[in-house]
Amino acid sequence: MTFPASQIALLINGRVEGDPNAAVTAFGKIEEAVAGQLSFLANPKYEEHLYTTGASVIIINEGYELKQPVSATLIRVADAYSAFATLLSKYQEIMQQQLQGVQQPSYIAPSASYGEQVFIGAFAYLGERVKVGNNSKIYPNVFLGNNVVIGENCIIHPGVRIYHDCVIGNHVTIHSGTVIGSDGFGFAPQADGSFKKVPQIGNVVIEDHVEIGANATIDRATIGSTLIRKGAKLDNLIQIAHNVEIGNSTVIAAQAGISGSTKIGNGVMIGGQAGIVGHIQLGDGAKVNAQSGVSKSIEPGKAVTGSPAFDYTAALRSQAVTRKLPDLEKRIKELEALVKQLLAEKAAIS
Image (tube, rainbow, N blue to C red):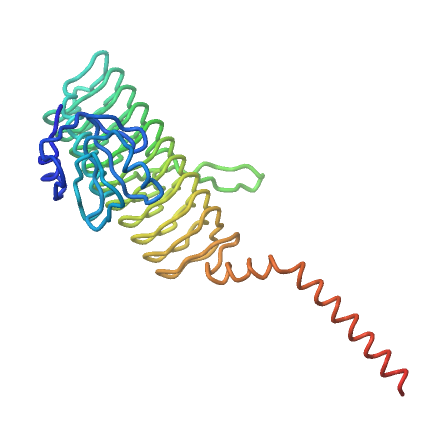
């Protein structure tokens, strides 16, 4: 497919600077792009490539000042990075629309149903009473257990497993290897030292516009629902335990772990490899630095770091003092020697 700069500008509310008929058929990184490709410049570190790239069309910020002539046609926008992301989404949407129909072999239970323009890949399994909404794409080797509901415009990538009774909203993307609705880690200690499994009879509910990375696990609730609220974004290799609630537009980076029944507010940011204990609350807008160990609730808007995690600003001050400890030790020894010398001189005088 070929798109002229003028049409692209309309899609991203941009202003063409150069040839409005300059056409592109593909995307390319600004340092590697060739003629016929579209690129963007958002990071000043790549500015030098703006003047040497072979790209035919480049998206840049509205207020960006050129230091020398540029051969490519420019499309100026308020935010080049966001505009480029919008174009990639449009492109992906067009490509996804080409996937339709049911591939064989696949298994679709007699009581399962699916909407219009749906794609179901080979070796997919749709259990009893499964419902798949319009325009959703179920890739090969996906397992959907009994009573699973998939909303509209969802993308369920190869190898995803969604256990029985779980509910997925609209415009949700789940990447390969992720497991939704596996049992929560519930075991009751017995008098003889053994552990008795506590049945996990709840489910997982994922609301609209959520994206979940590859090889993540979200456990079903013991009773009720494990909840991932609207617009949350979860990276690869994340563990979400039973009865956890993740708030709207919260983002969690790779290898983080959230223990059972923890409530995470809206707009929270959690760094990679952070660990959060169970039965606490993270207020709206809280920030957890990478590799932090959170053992108690966090107030809204507060940033923490370290293990155990504490106030981010105070932690930075502590780190600054720690770096100065060798110098402080040296100064203390010098002061001790000076005090010792003064005491000796005083004794000699008296």
